[in-house]
Image 1 (cartoon, rainbow, N blue to C red):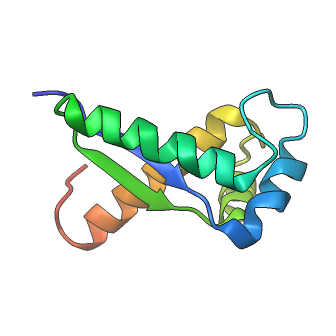
Image 2 (image 1 turned 90 degrees about the vertical axis):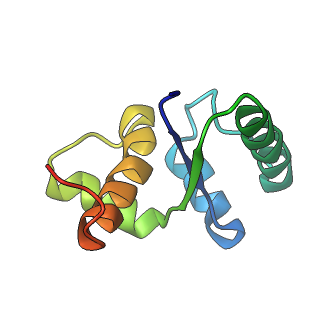
Length: 99
């Protein structure tokens, strides 16, 4: 069984704030529609390869608050970890996940 993939789903209205926060990152495209097109292609490809993909909507204020509460840096690694945290929390709350 392939490991599930967890990917962030950004909100269009927050896109510019994400870009501004990660202005030095070469992994954030400047245009939301370009990102969304790539995101849909990636998710489609992963699913065609047999992966279970969890698209997790992320909120920038929630991300910043979470990172600060854990004394984590605001960077690409924690940006990638945040949707995993959200999904794990939801699964735990639903009783679908045990530590």
